[in-house]
Image (cartoon, rainbow, N blue to C red; front, side, top):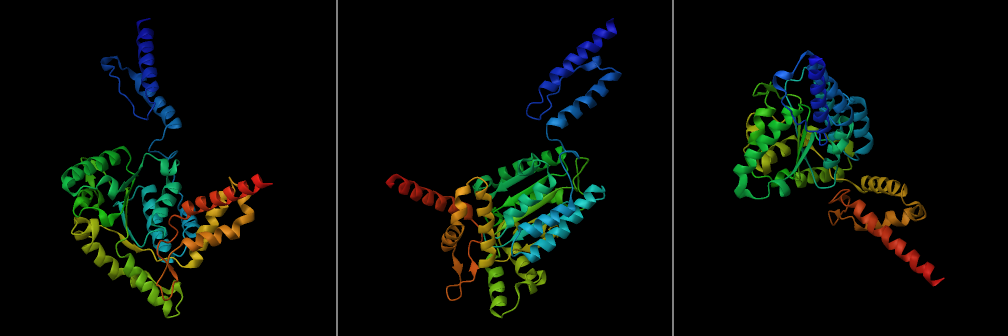
Length: 359
């Protein structure tokens, strides 16, 4: 009878413990010497129930589908044959080593190019193909320079906080993804704190840190990338003939001399696995972005189908193409197309409503 009461108390405590999972944080209840042999089994069952409903760092919530990732990169990123090839190889290779538990180093990538060319979209494609919850995953950590590190006077505090965030998140889930946006605006030396987590065979406080992915996104080098691309196109050469080696020197020089990687230990120790150029988009690429936006909008607004061509033309009028004497490259890529689309649809809808009122 005493054993029955003993077990009943433990079950009640565990049930309360499970109820307190609400935000995914297990609130520990000390049961001390009351723990018996069956208690560890209950813990295991509780963990399974928790991870059935709440995101955990396991196979249910983190899936590694290299083939679908490559397919998504090829079908959803326009005009970036260099970036797509490099990212497909690097991400697939890293994820395969993580899957086989043979990873020796976190993957560190530096993406460069003008706004609107697909850098941010890469992060979305990766997380959609890695995490069940996509960009809503608790294992995706996105830092924006002008939001998280905007005051240069607080560099020491930022560094301390960043170190704690990375260590804590990697301890919770080694497969976490860290994205740093606006790298050209991040204070130099801040990212030195990443070095211990990006090193070969990294172990921090007894925990292996070799499965993570760090992605740096920057406009740095964008003008030089665009100039190189423009000169190539002016020579009547196919865009696809441009290769990574054509931009390697440009990217390394700007990474060393500009922005958040300037003088960093990541550069000094060669821990950035690849510097990847994103080429400026041409009119045909922007048109594909507009078509995608229209198709997506059509799903919730059937009335726009009759205005596709008109809407498309009006959006294109807003796009700034350069250079002035030969405007073939979009200065802002596909950036803000969605906002322009919404504005134009509102104008069209308002016009139709006015016509209805006059009938």
